[in-house]
Length: 388
Ligand SMILES: N=CN[C@@H](CCC(=O)O)C(=O)O
Ligand SMILES: [Zn+2]
Image (cartoon, rainbow, N blue to C red; front, side, top):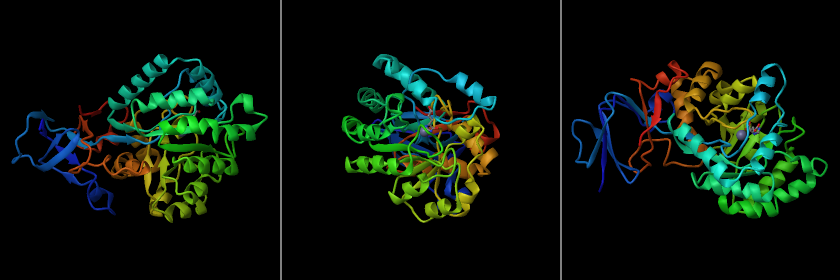
């Protein structure tokens, strides 16, 4: 059977409590233990009366939570844009133009280089408690490199996203329609076999990104090819991204930084589309933070993700995202932890992760702390690590 007993748990957060009150939904259990085998949870019960197991992990009073689900990352890339960040801190606004810098560096990086860079970022994320990563393409913007990025991403996760519609590459600046035709034609056919999702940077406030009509064309082509839609929306200003995501029943619309009341209403009207908030981006671009309270008060389901990428948020740290969500967006620690686990799992249409329940994946994260509150109470210190 090769079963492992996890015991000595000071506070167990299952995220499997009744919906409604976040504190109750956390499903906090004390004096509980877990048994898992083949990465599946077999048993959760009283630590004083545990079934037999082959191995034993003593948490020595630490807190155990569901492994973080990071449902929005751009981890396959080469190059560095720290100079762009420094310029932004002097007041230069972000408009997505710097993506071309990363595209140039990524196109000339070989597979071994990209694989090594990706492996280091995956390990960095796991060392901070992340157990599921979604990984997008989007730094190739030509058929071969986009397909290469997704092939490398698929080596480390099944949650891969085709983002050929990240920006219009320089060589197509004067022929946007031709690039949209490439993204929805040869590039889509080359990439779809290695992708579960299709995404688009839907942003009329950037000359580099895609307007509502272009974004719709891209997503409909991806759906036709069997991919599930996700959207980068309303990041730099009001725009059609949220409405388009809800209309096409996208699993998630991400950023949601600039929301009009009609956008909040649209998100509140559906169970299909999660509003994924990316506070590391506002932190790193000095944008205003999304009005998370308005979303929650309207009954909108939210997720938190890192959006780790070289341009707007170069951090894999989900604990940082939780601390920012509490400090800057007014979430309670319970709301933030649920958004970084169960909520982010919903943004991937998954129910076997982001939660600790029998039959679910044994993706467990240990906090070197007596309570989950320390994720926001002690920002910037390494208290979280994935078990195993
Ligand atoms: N806005 C679009 N894409 C990424 C940024 C990519 C980059 O600047 O390299 C984002 O989600 O913020
Ligand atoms: Zn992104």
